[in-house]
Length: 279
Ligand code: ADP
Ligand code: MG
Image (cartoon, rainbow, N blue to C red; front, side, top):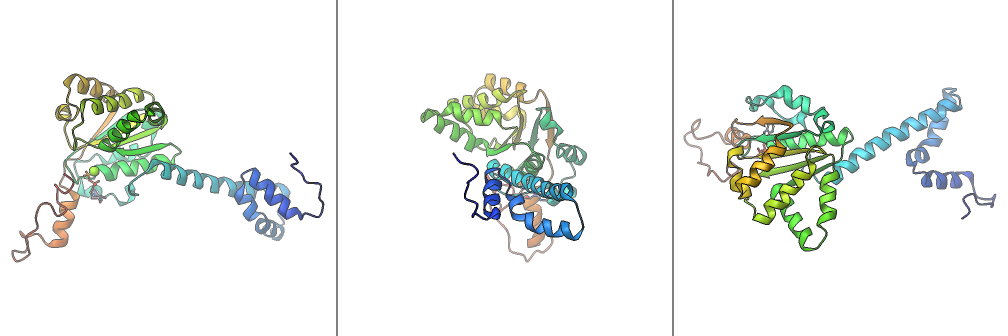
């Protein structure tokens, strides 16, 4: 294979573009002429010129990597801690959440469990911590417990369970949202147990649930399996209890001026975005 064509008539810009493409340096390729002009104006020497290009390439590459990790994480929405109103959730340990956003627990392969009723910001918090992890360079997979079990069962039927398990084992942070809304079959429970068990002390796992631990047996069906799972999951764990009022309910109360403030306001059924909306 000829890497350097002998045809001298090819413009150096064309050859350069070709080499930079092969070397995967798109920012170099896009910026080198502009940076050359700026460097000439500033009387910057060649090392400085190259340094500027390298810096631009690295900044751009970091940004592309973060975007790729976010895409691969399959977040259903983008949420960050910037939009999380801590005042609305006074029972939540703000200092702990901010510490978790620094992601050291992911490096230590610890777990994090958010417990609380519907609408209290568990998913928002999980998405925000997932985003922070992507920004800090960790691979993330976001799923709900029901979707994960469904995916595992499907993979098992199609004889590709190993590959899927490997994916969930190797990701640095696995987020399993909404454990507790849907009970699993015995096979589903075992498959989910295997995921948690294989990740034990190998990767960080974040679980959100509307159920306190003593009710998890109702989801997994088996007391023995639930005990073994909680044993692993809660060995190195940060637990966040979100016991405040539903944020959805509170905001819709404000927006609709709840009947207690305005007796003429039209009543709102509990299913219109209130605490039960997701059930
Ligand atoms: P949960 O997962 O506990 O049911 P969500 O995280 O889905 O609750 O929150 C429901 C909605 O309310 C989302 O749109 C979320 O962004 C918002 N929300 C919840 N808590 C807060 C909060 N403390 N600050 C800002 N938005 C919040
Ligand atoms: Mg949720």
